[in-house]
Length: 121
Image (cartoon, rainbow, N blue to C red):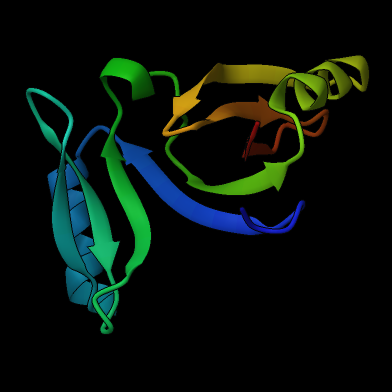
């Protein structure tokens, strides 16, 4: 696991994922690797070294509540405890918590309205 407080991923959740996938492929040179979500594909966008650079996801299913913005994922020690602190300090939960692999993640909104995801145990 990455150091606590590290930004480990970014993704973008939108209604028109194939169009946005193609936009970024043309503009920045990313290549799309389909990620099967059941009845549709989301995309891991690969850099020139064939490494995952970011994700572009459909705003449907489990991602229906995610706002259309570049969302960064930051590691925390304990998602449940971080949610408690978020709420106590005037923030809110946008989506989750839910599982992502062996970890939990949650999308939160700070008191100023900015959104980010926290991920950890």
